[in-house]
Length: 200
Image (cartoon, rainbow, N blue to C red; front, side):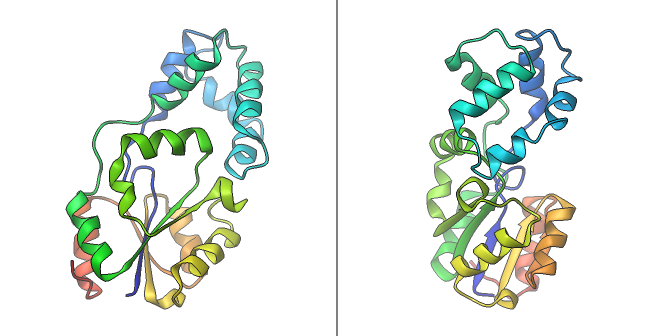
């Protein structure tokens, strides 16, 4: 193995969208359970996470869809409240891996969330590069984003291992020839790395 690739959400950074839905319920006429259904009925999230709509446009469209009564600043606070304290992987692991391997982040995300994550989780500084959907213009499991990850990895697919918590995204990586594992815990990551001869 030459490059270790990690997903971001619920692999490194813990999050729970229900926290935001509960907060939005107090600012919108819709119940918390209805909010994700209304958003999934549009292509807004896909456009936001592939850079086809910017942060301001996203806030405007979400506010219209959910009939929100809030300020821009309050919206950002609610939208970012999904993130939980602490990281799911020990920083010592990333530090050790960085010294021997190329470390890559591969994430479906957006500029609002990623700017917040960078401030709140300084351990991201240990990654050599980031492949972010809103910058690349493609989301997992699109082949395009895995192709970009391999370009940034600077090694063949067979020399990379990828950890993601979503089965479909693991399958997408495997289709691109990348050795991929569905994330369960930090202990599982360490065991899977040892099985591949990775040391830190």
